[in-house]
Image (cartoon, rainbow, N blue to C red; front, top):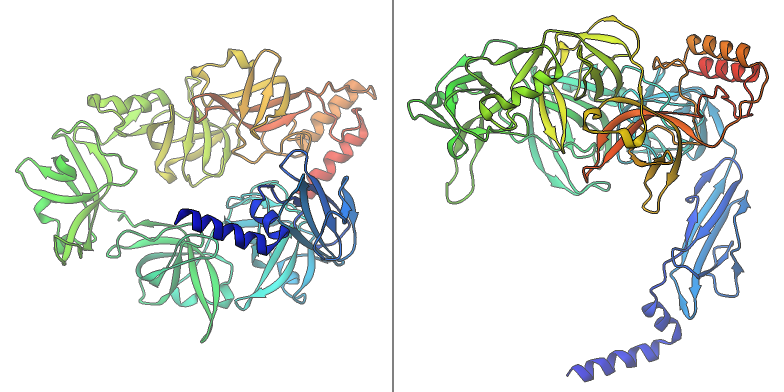
Length: 639
């Protein structure tokens, strides 16, 4: 039987002919064509490559299928008119599949703001002459705003932006209408974020979700969710539809997943939510809905109700409670009298590994439906745990970061995250999104991960912080417990980095602000950036989207975290000192950043700035003179 099957396959291939034989036998990669197809406002340089060494690329420019008699690719070429390019790779007798891209060209229409962009016809290539601020970004969905309105940009911008990031002017895209609303597609020319602007969501009720709020970032408080079902989303593996009901009884549609947020585990409790407003075209017309960005259970701002495990039920549903002198055998809460109740523990807080009778459990009483065999149906009640404390001291008073780390060793409970209240100020060093580097009174550095309701500059003093600590991947991290407890209380001198070499780095420098002078920046075969100082090398992890050299090597001069007139004054001093003498550059950089640990336990640097040595040569003309001052003034005025 096997011989007959093999003979049949060979017969089919023989009848299909040589072309089919080549297609089935091909193991040659199809050529890549850069840039991607789409609409452009100016001539482009088109290049091609094949990942298989020794392959030859042939292409056509009229959309026809290429052959070995077509144009042979020898190097990049200019395209300035509408064109469909198709290409194949050939190696020996093997021919790859065809790759095709289509380029369209039109003159870009310049727009001042989002309001002007919304007025241009569909299919228009537009260029924004002013910056926009990011509201939310997930995958291809980018929501932005300016002083005139809010908008949805859809497509691959080449960057991931966080809320508050400022996108510089000059980017382009094609204006289209989708689901009844304008949408910028085919994004081009999007640069790294060039600043930060605080963004507050619009507080609304569910009945205000409509066209007037399209693409806005909004917040609703004290809401509940009811999910209808799951469906497949084009960009993501899941999406969950449902209904939101606010505290006034108003409802609106809601879809979890589009912005990467999964639905809540429980529908019986209340939540605060932030979302962007989207739209969907249905048979009944355009429907406006919420795409959640974040949500969290509401913890009442009141003292917890002290109860026993047997009181977890309908009478305490939705209440903020505390159960004292309990432990956690088999994942349940058990008190000194043997009473038990169910609990739900999430990633924070973490269940203590050594179980004793000294814990207080804080949380919300919630219900859930049990429909699976063998337990049968019905409503169950449990405590959603929000905090775990020790009876003798729920909130320890601490004086420094080391004291916070030591709280995890209380009663030898590994990874127990007892919260600490700082009695001495912390100094802010650098903040980017949910990452805040701080230094304490004993010159120890720490990394705060999570939302704090203030924005800090280098040198700002922080008082009253309440936080927890946890070891993650060999390094400690600090997590805010009371987010508004990080209070800005004055300003001190900016923190300057410690100048070190790569070989002198050790564990005591984790999260420390460091400067490496005279290093080379290379890209290795694995696609990772590294810096080399002649006696050592270290991997660079670009967590903060800092442009790598040579593009954007200028950051700020006086290291205060801002580009302003203070930088101009220092530059003028340098010009007066150096005159017009050339400031030679040997190809190395000075790099500033924070030390961390990589996935293999290796040291990595998270850079925040690259400098061309001690150079003040901002415009790369190899001289420090008045042209650098003019260049800096343009930067300041353009902010």
